[in-house]
Image (cartoon, rainbow over all chains, first blue to last red; front, side, top):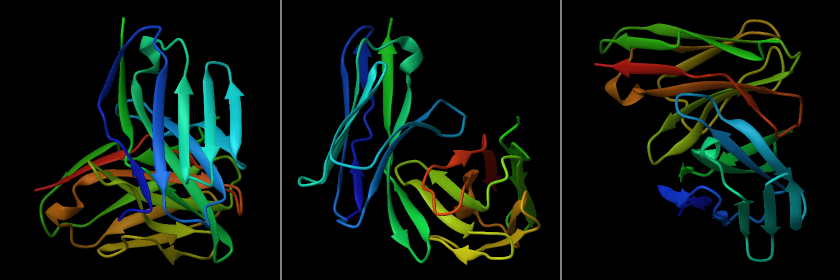
Length: 113
Length: 112
C-alpha cells in the first residue's frame, strides 16, 4: 500500500463548478501537507501549505486537513479553464535532519469553458 | 530571478550511453533534490543534498550518481542509461529543514 493515495482522474468539470480533490495517507508521522499544481510540461509549483488540522483559504482555493481520518482535500471554487492542470498532494515528515516529502500521483483536472 | 534552471530540456540516448543532467538555483537554498516523474508513479526522490558537501540516496537511486558542485549546482549522472530510465527528471531546491520545494521545468529523457 502506498503511503499517499490520490485518485488519478481525469476529472472534467464545467467552468464555474466547485472542484474537490482528495488524498488519503497512512503515515501518522506526516506533519505538513501541501498541494502543488503542475501545468502540462512544466514543473510543479506550490499552491497551498498547511500544518494543522482544519481549513486554510487562499482566494478560490481551500485546503482541508483531517489528521484523525488521515485525509486531505483541496477545494476550488468558481473553477476556471486556467485551473486545468494536474494537482499533486504532498506530505512531509522529519527524517534524519531534513523534511522528507512524499507526493501523491496527481489528479488531472480539466475545466471546460 | 530564474529560480531553478535545468539543462538539457530534452535528450534522447541509446542504451548504455552516459549523460549528465545539470541543475542550478539562484535562491541561495541549501538543499537540493533530484526527482523522476513517471505516469502512475508520481514524483520519486532519486538523490538529495541537504547542504553543500553532502548527498544522500532517496527512494530510487540505483543507476544514478550525483555531484553537489557548489551551493548553486547539483548534477545527476546516468553512467549507463537503460530504457527503464526513460522519464521526466525534476530538480528542486529548498531552505534547510523546509518542506516547500521549488522545482525546475524538467528534463525529458528518452532511452532507446
